[in-house]
Amino acid sequence: MSAHKVAVVTGAGRPGSIGWATVQRLLAGGWKVVASDVGRPLESHPDYEVAAPEDLLRLGTENPDSVLAVACDVTSESEVVALFAAAVERFGHVDALVNCAGLGIGLTPVVDLTLDDWRVNLDVMATGAFLVAREAARVMSAQGHGGRIVTISSQAGKTGMPLLTAYSAAKFAVIGLTQSMAMELGPLGITVNAICPGTIETPLLHVKGGLYEKYAASAGISVEDYQKRILKFIPLRRLGSPEDIAESAAFLLSDAASFITGEALNVTGGQEMH
Image 1 (cartoon, one colour):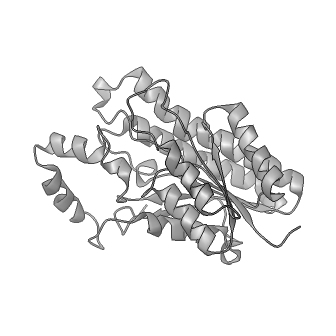
Image 2 (tube, helix red, strand yellow):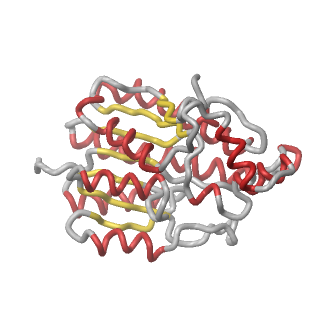
């Protein structure tokens, strides 16, 4: 096996996102990275602000020796299989997966939550996480030298929150997926963990219909006032950054975390302690 380590990172095409920061962190650590994102509008929600395809391509063109950019809809089984095939073809093997694909749709009271909004949350963040993690497990198992799988859940995957019914359901599912896969894949030397970010300053907070807009409206205050209010619930008195989560992912991929599996690691500044 060649000396370089190879990671697949989904949800990597939006500057300022957790996936984007994770790619940058891994590159700084000497990894080769296969960066992916959906690359086109969602069929079910065509007005939702997905990552711009040109940003994903920029990751590859700016790092031609270290990054392979691949458009991939994580809800498509065939596209997920093709993603890992491209990774192996380009770099020879896959050592790690960081499953970051996510969205912010359907932030409404449950009585107003549509079936389409429910489905897109579960499709992308539960079924999509499963498809990508399963394919990573298949590739790593066939290689026979272990591996690392990390999926981004949420503090809302441990404690349900108002207006986040579909999102929370998907993120709770990620933790169950993580624990079951950790039990199965441990004997193969593959660790499987989740990260549960708190309130992280990413573009998803600011998209139309996103958390800031919905929670501020629900409280009857401005977005600016809501941003100030939320800090009171974070013991460290700051929002998290995408880099905070990227550092945690890099740790879980490292040799220092070789005896950690089945965990759902809070990275919340103390906002979640369960």
